[in-house]
Length: 117
Length: 110
Image (cartoon, rainbow over the protein chains, first blue to last red):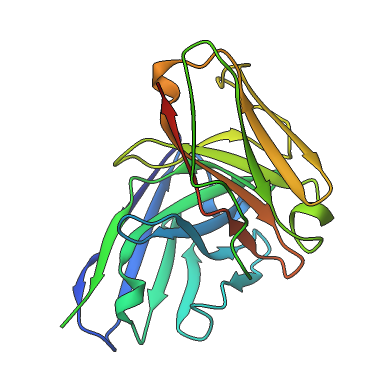
């Protein structure tokens, strides 16, 4: 079964760091484009970052320079390293597999990040 | 990158058809045939409904269809059913190799 499972969310103080993980099963992360998408409480979806199968990475302006997307091919896992966190980064973070489009056809269940003192 | 523009809400009665618009610019919606649509029920992850403007993934009802004209894409749902009540989001590839979502549309089935 094709599945994504996120972990690593939690409560962190402003200025702090957190690393999210997204474990994949049923397909190979490194062979696909993989994205992170977030959703603030009561708000819409916001694209955060993508890593291409070739390794290129792209970021939304709102997180550029603070977040880093990466993957561990041996663990078939996607990561999002989040530094210098702000209150406005509070959201449910989803990882998603991209197919042609690019369209996100497989989503995880989400992990909640709360940035608050 | 500004969010794509969607109506905040639309409504329709069972059996009717509704259309949700998604307006961007020539740097995203108008520049590529890379528009996708997602359905999200409360507390759930989004579900892909349409990709590449008008293609349906396997398993998605043919009551859902997509189109595009210029900088505006549209999602049409025909034969509305109660289970279609959800939030809908459009998304597009952008000229900076990013992605951008619309603000979302709440569909109410009356």
